[in-house]
Length: 111
Length: 351
Ligand code: SF4
Ligand code: SF4
Image (cartoon, rainbow over all chains, first blue to last red; front, side, top):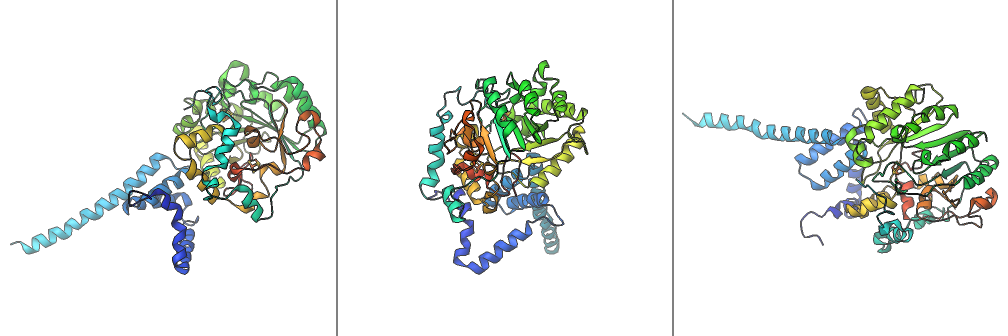
């Protein structure tokens, strides 16, 4: 039993979620598989997007998975870190842009 | 970065039995992962049987000028096992009479065997269709006496297959040693300069990509495109094909997996990626591997685990292709490496 909420070994059991709802689980994994196929974007580009998003949604399982996936695809650590910065910049920007709302509200309430 | 072989370090992993104990134990013994033979059984392929012999792979010695971290041979400058001329003569007899169309010389660094050139000259007279030498590239630049190797290869129309872990310096040097990348690039330029690897050239130059760590190789075609573009753009280097080879949990790679705490996860990844469609084309089904001291094995990996062929013919001095081909191939959990994803052999993907 893990002594923290996240146990890396749980990642191997991801597929088991289908056992409690086969239809939805299967639909999800079919969709997931399709999304990551080579398409208008290369599998390599998709892997970097997934890595950036993993950081933004702060999922340790996805971070592990897409770091490994990046290695498998020959993606360099410099490319991986740049992707993480893109995620961080968007996340930071998304926080900051709400500053406009704060400013609007402040101005509306102020004399 | 390793500086000595496991054998020179008197590491217990240099012992075949210790490696096999690990491969048969852990998650397999605990029933968490299925034994490879059971997976073969599920598809009616156990025991695994050979098809027609196509490839003779000869390991002319474990001596090497490098000590790569992932080496399944546990090769290095401290390994003294070298094929003698007497054993080479026995091999030549077999080469002349075999039905195999491919001869694959490997090591260590095969070029370091003092009789290497003599052997290549003699063997090339036998009219083998595809005569491969697995060169680690740096040997070509290691010492003046090797500088003319590209010309020597060209003279005998050798098909050169070379390891190139990555098209970036950092990754290559980490796996294979400081300076290996730059030396490999120079060696590739030397080979290109005399026509090897050039588009439309019949002087075949292929590269081998092994993952530099505890992960599987990605799509071979995509990797080949990335390698070709980067090596062309950065160094004006050309080559023909890229073979993506999965690292098998043997010798120094096994040591690395255990020391880095990756062994179990790696075995899970291999089992998860198991592809029954790859089974029918695994290397051992059309290959015989001959060791420096003349023993016969199903493949280079079984050779390193000391698993001699399950046949009444076990040594090159008794070679008989018909008897040999009527055998059961010996498998263990390392075989998952050959059947992961698109499969893996010395010539890359198998499907
Ligand atoms: S991987 Fe090849 S080059 Fe590296 S030590 Fe082993 S035999 Fe030598
Ligand atoms: S390691 Fe690969 S080639 Fe060797 S016996 Fe196993 S499946 Fe066959």
